[in-house]
Image (tube, rainbow, N blue to C red; front, side):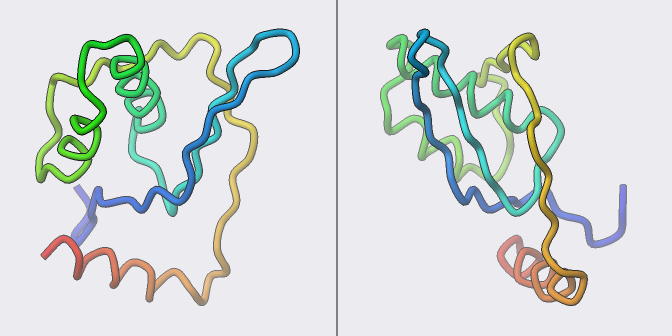
Amino acid sequence: KRERATTIRTLIRCSFSRTDDGLVVATVEADAFCHSMVRSIVGALLDVGQGRHEPAWITRTAEALERTAAIQVAPALGLTLEEIVYPPDEDLPAQAERTRRRRA
């Protein structure tokens, strides 16, 4: 574990669309990602869409201080990483400090 590391992430955008041929496209943008984070987001939203949880469950789960086993991680098959964009190096320390303050 890295000293002063945090798993807090800021979700900037999460949207879904459907292509003309019926493919569902999820677009997830964040300041950083944890292991299986996108698969967890997609799995949680699928659970809500399929009626296993009410929509407010997403907010409660996201605001919880600890991860819950109730989130069903979506299978990796079909998920594709398309792009990684990093902020300028000079912005990284300030972003890390904001995240650490939020965790405290």
